[in-house]
Image 1 (cartoon, rainbow, N blue to C red):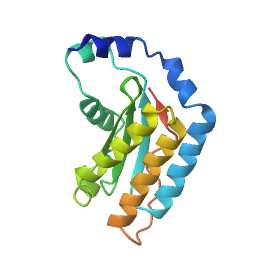
Image 2 (image 1 turned 120 degrees about the vertical axis):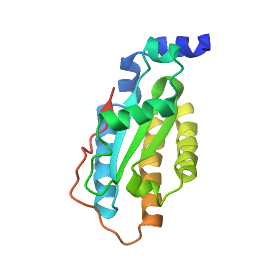
Image 3 (image 1 turned 120 degrees about the horizontal axis):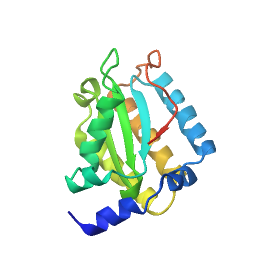
Image 4 (image 1 turned 90 degrees about the vertical axis):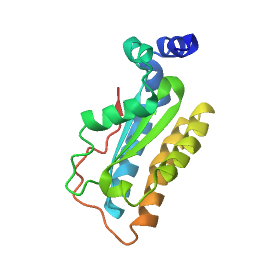
Length: 165
């Protein structure tokens, strides 16, 4: 375990996430998610976690592993068409992970999701949280449009409002 990683998480308070993702930005993200879901078959959740617990850090939990945990805990997988997509941000590391349920993962390669994650991480590292968040949601929309052209969204099974953990 790298001591720098523990320190980075310990020094990332929850209030900093609220400063980087203020209510107005969260509203914009929710609005954009709603728009995307009406035009595409995916159900999106946007989650920002300020830092990991010490036990998780000591066990070596990676941002990807935590994203998979959150995907399960929030039941993003529990949609009628197995079309949930989690955009997970671990703020302490400016790490972004996208987890797609099996209905979408069969059609969109993980490499495409990963490339989008790296693009969004670049924005976050530069302090452009609004641009990064919108790039994430818009990037998911573009991938869904490319792989599911002409398909309209469903009934909005997951909340559009971003979640801060």
